[in-house]
Each structure stands twice: as structure tokens, then as C-alpha cells.
Length: 399
Ligand SMILES: Nc1ncnc2c1ncn2[C@@H]1O[C@H](COP(=O)(O)OP(=O)(O)O)[C@@H](O)[C@H]1O
Ligand SMILES: [Mg+2]
Image (tube, rainbow, N blue to C red):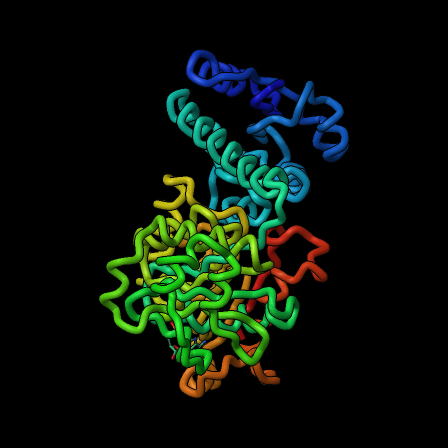
């Protein structure tokens, strides 16, 4: 099997890739002529020897439009392959590459050492994506989707998004959704859903519930919309007795019982949050329309990429969207380095719904914030999943 495939006719570049691969990285390199791009993915695949590669290098010397077209199809059909585009990294190319699912845009002048580092990282990413796919298909027992709603900052709308997502999914899969409040000290899922829970996460992770999923279910609170909730402890001090291992066990238990486990988290990347990310199939990344929030998310992505803790499904939400903020969606995308999937405009209905304890998706609100939240729910609705999620990105507009 060729672990690396380069589509290029530039011999000098091919030589550098070969040097980068030889010795330091396992596997060999297959080179294809840029002519193959004219025929589309099938033609590319016919030329490949053995199993699909881990890393595909597009260029230099390929037509960028052809390369991006091929990348879009590969990203959908073979998301486990890491794609690199070799081209002068202009902002326009970077943005288009990002939308086509390309991992990195590399200058043709890159030296051997830098190339080696990039290829090694691309291999690690490919391996981690394959692992994610296998864990779903090989585990035998069907596990639910674990959706972590995260952001490095507080007050950006995590709880609003998490409660609405859970309620919205409750309509898709009644009694098969649980929302877990892992903002252990100051969680407000209970108040956001107007619940008076008898039990909290504290009882769920200690004692018999931790050994038996049926017992655990008895500690959950049922919400009128047909979802279950596991709320944060009543006293912030109780959080000291909840460890990352408790969280791991709890989420594993819930994932075997529910189709969707929506986890609301505390701001930042604390131990409970990292434990959640290890098991999450999906990350919903909430970002406000202010510079600290946007920069925070960029840092967060970069740290999690290094730790290989980014869940396979990525769903970016731009909340508090406001045309008058002086920042555009494109600015946000360029800073965080990934496309925005869902935009939720600033809306008076959301604080009102938080204060009443009735998520907007529980009612029939048609305002634009509710529409944005519905679009997010649809990304997880199997009836609408004709296109793999998180792969195709249409330009979103703030109105
Ligand atoms: N798009 C929005 N427009 C207006 N207010 C919002 C919006 N999203 C969230 N809010 C309000 O902002 C406050 C903080 O939101 P919350 O979901 O609790 O954030 P977090 O969980 O990230 O701390 C809440 O009162 C909520 O109603
Ligand atoms: Mg919150």
C-alpha cells in the first residue's frame, strides 16, 4: 500500500516528498500525473495501487479548481484521507481549501524538514479519523451519538444551544435523548429547562447507578418535551467529588442507553471536558461575535488538534450574530480556521426563554434564532442526513 500519494509533475517537489518520507516515516510514495485530475475521483482511484492512501498531496503544478473539486469529493467519500494542497497560500485559496476539506495548504518551496513534520501530522490525523470510524462500526453494540457542546468562554450560549439541541432532538427521537450538565459548579440546565431535579450527577456517578445503567436511568429527570436530563449538583462543592473517570463511565453508560447524549460543559478545557471529548462523536463549538471568543476558539482548536481530541463530527455555531458587530462571518472563519456551519442571530427571544425556562424549540417560535437552532438540530437528524455532515459548507450570511 502507498501511504502517500502525490499528484504532481514537479520532479523537484516529488524528490523532497520522497526525502521527507524515506527513513523517518513508514510507507511509500506513489506519484500520479496531474492529468488524472481531469478524469475525476474514479480515474484517480483506478491508478492507485492497493488500499486508499493515508495522505494525498495535490500539487504543485495542478489546476487549483480541479484539485479543489477532487478534494471535495474525497472529503465526502474518504474523510479518513488527509489532503494537502501545494500552492501559494493566498487567503482566497486557504478559504476555498478549507471549504473543500483540505487539511493544510503548503507552499511549493517548503523544505524537507517542514514537509516531514506536516506529513507526520497528516498521518496521525488520518489514523485518528480511522480509529473514530472503527469505534463506531466495530463496537458491536450500537452506541448513541455523544454531542459535546463547548466553548472556551462563558456566556456565549452553550447552555442555550445544548438545551435547544436536546429538546429539538427529542422531537426526532422521543425518550431517546439525555442532556447532561457537566458545568458542575454553576450549571444551569435545570433552570433552563424549568426542572426541579430530585437527583443530580453526584448520585449518578456514585453508588449503584454507576454499576447499572437501569439504576442510572432512575436518577434522571424527565422533561415534558420527552427528553431526560441529568443536572449539575445542587452545591458547587460537590463537584470536587466528581472525577474525570466518573465522567467517562457515566457517558459510556448513557451512550449505550440513549440515541443522543447532549453534554453541556463548563467554559474552557477542564478535566471533565477533556474526558467528554475523548468519547464525543460530535463537538458543537459555540462562538460569540467578539474577538476574545473567536480567538479563544482558535486556541482551543489548536490545543485539541495537538492532543488529537477533536471529535469526528464538527459543528461550528456563531451565536449572537449581528451585522453591526463590525465582524463578518468570513472574518470569524478566517480566524478560527474552519467554516461556520450555523448562525444564530442575537435575539430578544433567547434571554426571555432562558428566564422562563422554556427553550425556544419547545414552542413554535419562528424567529431567526429559532431557525438557526433548528438548522443545528437538522444536522443530527438521520432522516435528513443524505449528505455526510460537516463536510459540505454553504456560505452563511448574517442578516
Ligand atoms: N443569540 C442570542 N441572542 C440573545 N441572547 C442570547 C443568545 N444566545 C444566548 N443568549 C443569552 O445569553 C445568556 C448566556 O447564555 P448561556 O447559554 O447561559 O451561555 P453559556 O452557557 O455559554 O454560559 C443567556 O441569558 C441566554 O439567554
Ligand atoms: Mg452554561
